[in-house]
Image (cartoon, rainbow, N blue to C red; front, side):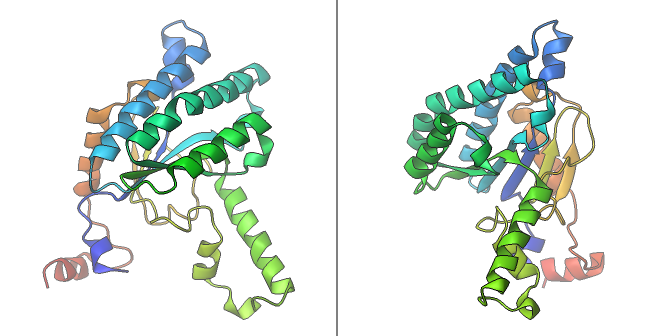
Length: 250
């Protein structure tokens, strides 16, 4: 573990489960779709905040889980349409603000128009450096590990890799987020306190933060409160508190 990571004062990678759109709408006696539209506005605010913060390199948002297909068909259709229209309206803005867009998850389940727009967004913004925005769509942590195991087993069968060479580093290289630092701070809005199959491998040493604020109401102030909580914690990564003190003050 690097000294830099142990002494990290601010999160380089923030991962968020954006929960509570539907409940936000229901509390206002509005259709759930209105809550999802309000959630998109919250995304804009948080992306802008992180892009302006020089210490934040990656912002990962759980937009649609592999389990969300179990929702009512009408709601899934609304979410897919909103996903497409949001990409159509936001890609140019992201590019203008030097933000790189990446997607993780099994995109083959989406229709061709959405897949094309996802690919377009990644290609157009691939060289941007202000912030990397990772959108997890049709993603699940178990799926991520299963697809990694499948590729690794295929490499072993092809003679490219020995089973004795398989370790954490090899597995990590075949996961969706292999090119990014692991999340430092995980946030879940909406009051639920679980990770819901999100980045199961990558969250091993992530600091967890749960807030009752519903996602459409989550703003820059709420995010700063989460970051302040993160900064107040001592991250040990298996070391003792005394060892961390020595590392921080050599």
